[in-house]
Length: 132
Image 1 (spheres, rainbow, N blue to C red):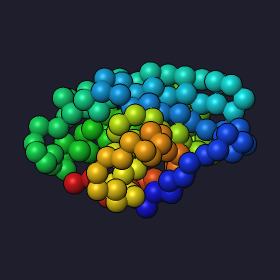
Image 2 (tube, helix red, strand yellow):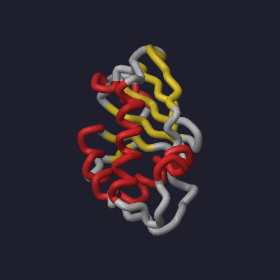
Image 3 (tube, rainbow, N blue to C red):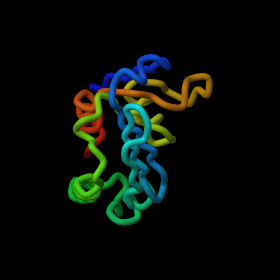
Image 4 (cartoon, rainbow, N blue to C red):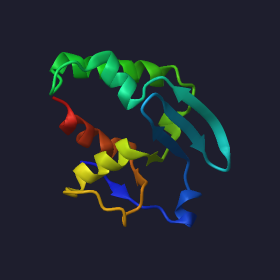
């Protein structure tokens, strides 16, 4: 499963974190401890990945694996210190949708915060559950 929690202002500055903004065309990554240390734009947005790899509805296993391989290749060349991040702060609709799935929220609720933070090692279970 995924550990999802909101960070208050004090907690955000106690540990290094990675900010991910997943858009349609690209994903923006920035690492921060006491200011932005590195930032990179990757050509792996959710629409772009869908256009490149997902032809079936629902996508078959090979299509999903090709999309994951594309993301992993982009991350490998990102030069953002992802392994050093203690927390991942995700922004945008793709992240809030993943959090809503994990939290079993049946419909959109705009009274909840638009961003969530989670520990990377705990999020792998939720991402695996979304695979075909």
